[in-house]
Length: 320
Image (cartoon, rainbow, N blue to C red; front, side):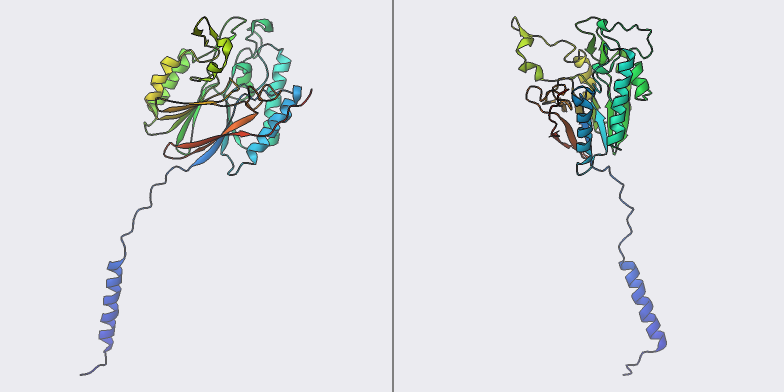
């Protein structure tokens, strides 16, 4: 038998092997659809920036602590009461405070800042202010102008999550309660419509100043009189019963607030309500009711779950 292969036999063998290799190749798959990434943001509420008691230096230290976090946050979300205080001060001081707030941010962080306003950010509402409603910047016009906001309330998207910064500061109309908590009818309708436009699977975070839900009031003896707990609308939003059903229509995972300078966490109807401690603690005089100066750190995942911790940044009260 002749064991020598002809040139034609060799070519046939090579061609056959190549064909077999080709058909043995795995089927090419389309690239998997990109999923949203996990990410971190920080929640800084009740900053109350001022020069008195070196409050501007305290805010700067908080921002430096934010910058030092690893991993570095994607952005800063503020919870209102950015300055202290424009409810009953002259226009000159009110302007100075907002300028100071912006300068401290510009000097200490390059992170994007999404702002929410609080009751102390509203110019001239206190009856003792002597500020006329005709004064330039009256009410929310000044903070809107200084922070360059198209609207006081707004929404934004980030890596598969949707965020709502709500303005829940309503006029109270008297000296005892110059403000109350809740959404005005226009904003309520906007919020309802925006939720309806949001995919039911999209995880959502809301941020507002006065809490929608909080248990912190139960630690205050003065709020219990004549066998009744007395929580007024300046402490907790008066429209909670109307808004909670809206949250249930969508995947609202987190509802953030401040205002109390205390901390609590309440899980109710599928939403986690977190009331954070204050950046200023007890108005730059030290911890407030045992809660040190600090801010919230949130690590969010694409499936709507998250991790949270409160970060004390080590501020020590300073004399004037």
